[in-house]
Image (cartoon, rainbow, N blue to C red; front, side, top):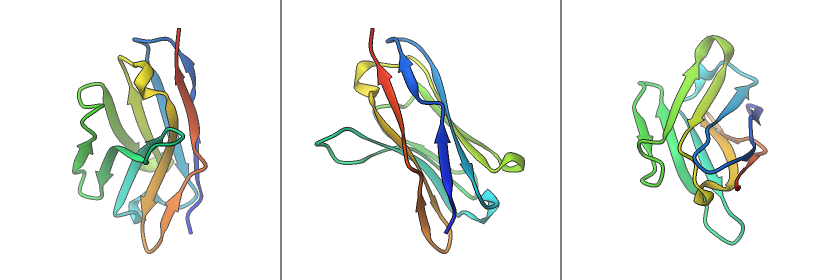
Length: 114
């Protein structure tokens, strides 16, 4: 099972930007799908963005036009560029990947507050 390690979370003011990274322990070309999810305590986990092996990208309705998912195959890293952040974006963001198995990262906290 792949190990996924997220980084880049933190505290940011409304309207600000943040970039999350997810580094994989295995070659990310082995994944058929990689994605970012987020979760707030007491609420269901929500898909933020996904990218498939053929570079098909999907975004959750709440982040369309503000967030961008990308990957660097040479660095085995998935990214999430977040802009125009709102307080509603506050959550734990987790990386997810599908190969022969499904893998999750430990999550990174993003807090949007003034």
